[in-house]
Length: 345
Figure 1 (tube, rainbow, N blue to C red):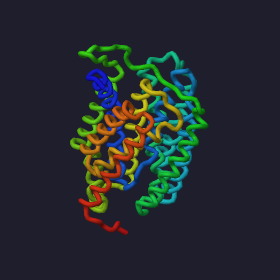
Figure 2: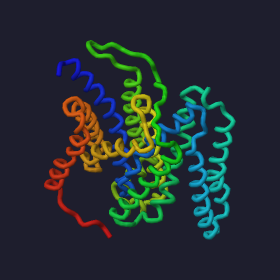
Figure 3: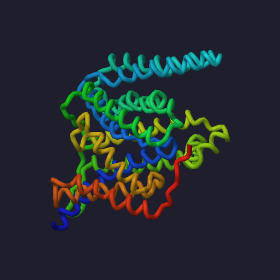
Figure 4: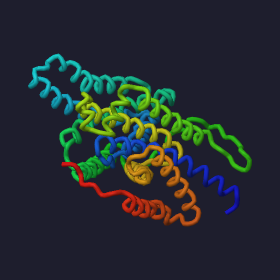
């Protein structure tokens, strides 16, 4: 391996590591606030990328029908609970957000010339379709069992992952897709050629991480999520709704996942089941951070990206094995360094 190859592999590793870092941050956030090991995080990456690909090809994405079905289910459950509690004034908002919004979105997507729209508008439409599924998923899947043990939440996550992969096959088919790059520009830096899409991925990841830091440090909702992550019981006593914290957390996780899919889809071909492998590499980064430390999780995810890139050069057939083997010494080290605590009942 000479210097030029090392630089190319390093560029590839940092690009992929930036995406893994975003997913690792989302996984740490979800676990800290809700105790859910969010295995379907990678599915939001695939759904985002493939929904955008459908729009680029001029098709109304089937994910909007999933949004309608989930919205109706949430509206029925929340509407019934509001009616039973005598809070009829909440009903228009509940039905407006969960039923009227997806229907209006479906009508707009059918009327708009999707294939002729600028890429930025297609990305915006993708976010509007897929991101609301995050809080809806929390309401339907996790909120009813929010107080269950972590193992039960993990089993439910596995079931949700399997369901989303199956739905992805129905919605998008077995064929893989790529989307057009955000930029066709190329820059020469010494012996290395850097593509505009690579710069987009790295800069967008940094901007998103900075925006998340501002959200958690400067906004009321961000501080509420931090309080919930530190002490759920204390946050509840201070008037912070666990349900609202959960929905907001899943909204952010879905936003990060969809943006990651949109960013990575011009670089690699995305299939309906690609998200699991991408999410799993973000999970390795989150494990390195102990599912608690955001900076260490982000650094670990970049390390995973670099390890994957260099492994593909030295032992391409075993690169996934090498990456996931990294988790074993990390878990051993953490088990030796930390004290065992029984889970709160």
